Image (cartoon, rainbow, N blue to C red; front, side, top):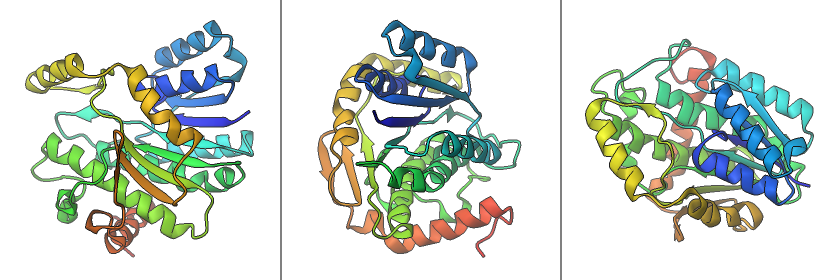
Length: 279
């Protein structure tokens, strides 16, 4: 029996993957902020006869302290983690900082992924075929990085912010493999295409109208799950791989520049240490 940990696992693609894995006999731990969604996930798990293998952890993963708490709890409860799915996200039309003073998207979409992947690396190494599946939009140009103002304290535009989130995941994957040389863990960046999820977020009127249209055009969640499950079952042999739907992306080119990944890693350590500046 495999143990699968899913951030953002109470809705959308994360939830779909969680129920799929439960249905085939895995143990699944989902993390989400909404206790009602957590209860519904557990109810659906029981309905398919998998309630004893389903676990919900309530946490606000936009908070560094909460990420660290949950990672420590999982590491204590589960000596082996076979797969980590990073799916947490929350769209914001206007800029918001967390209680810790970090821009919300940078905290939730990026820092949470960083903390979970590095924090559970030793548990993943104990797995038979360990994999980190990061649901993002890989392969865009590095120009999407707003290096002078990563947290968009000036000129916050959600389209630019979300484009940078994809690049943050790309560089996080590069940085993870560099930080864990010789690792058995496979880091997979994947985008299954437009999918009719709940598109959770805080939208202004114009953005809400756009999202409604995207929902109408999106593929069913089951189609996305069917596309992604192979990365959990049989990830590519190289340490880092990336996919836009079924198309594999070259991770040796400029969008995955190791120097940029090191720069981001330095900034990340500074943010997590509370200084806000690279050491």
